[in-house]
Length: 480
Image (cartoon, rainbow, N blue to C red; front, side, top):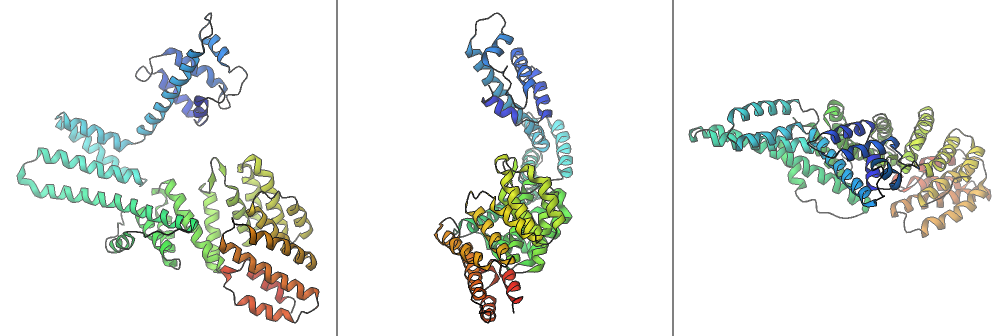
């Protein structure tokens, strides 16, 4: 019973939904079987875990069918029928949230039955609902077009042919609604394609991209800020130096946040975050500040990256480290302790240990940092890179240059031989490792006169191709 399809489905219900589903089952319109209602009430005593030892097929059969010989087919039937009704309930619940869609379907029914007065009344109610729609997304833009299409079909069948000008206005309105829906979908697809081509290092022709951008430049759909936001996101993705579009998105987001769907918000913030991170890596201080501002905003609004029901662990570590880089130690410490419980249980301790090591490093408690970092279980190359990165920097800060030398020697092999590490990341780390080891060699051999030439060489590398470039330069200049 614990691992049945029904209990898996019911675990995803909130307590309020469990109560609503019970009422749903009591309605003879949806369910005419009392035994199903009894069965549901019986098993939901053990919601949400459904792991009580009572929940066996035999015990349930004995309670629901007292005095009868055990028949497992009856229990399987109850499980199957209740699962089907639970799925119907979810459809009913979703449909009940689509007010305009229901009104539009009702209008079609009235039109087909020639109930003109009923249609006109439903039309007014639908128009009111559309005008009151707060969140603009894929569904609402589609429904606006669908409503206008239903309205035009009805009016065209009822009005005289002499009123073609009115029909023209209806067609115009319907066409504009179709354009808005289409622009939203095209821009959203373009944005997703840009993101995936970058992550997966793929190519795409981006058909119609330039035409759509040019069209919106001449015909901006300012009534729908979410479309304008996606327009600027595509421009940002197309041209990574388009900082002006970033600020346009930021301005639109601030003025129209409540009108944007949560799924759209996640996508918008993800692109903004990656855009600012790209410029932060290039040592753009303004964009680095924007990146951290976005992080705090995403956390406060609950739209941070998720892995199922949990906080995505790599995003968690990145967010914590960003707080340390920005020297907002108090916020970072509070974030770590407040949100660590949202990391998957099997990864929680390791994430906490790594972040504690990073925290100790930034608070200049270097011995503690080494102790914490040495306790981290390296499960993949991402963890390995993070741990070794901070171990090398910590050993340097302690003046243990010989240990720096040996650790780099082993770490370099790990970086160069691992095919899972992206090439751009290999370049960044290999530059850091090579120059840090050369600097350690110069110090150990007491040839500090080489430091100046090393500084000049490091400065010639673009910051985006060199991990910890600023850190290494700062520490080398202290030796001059």
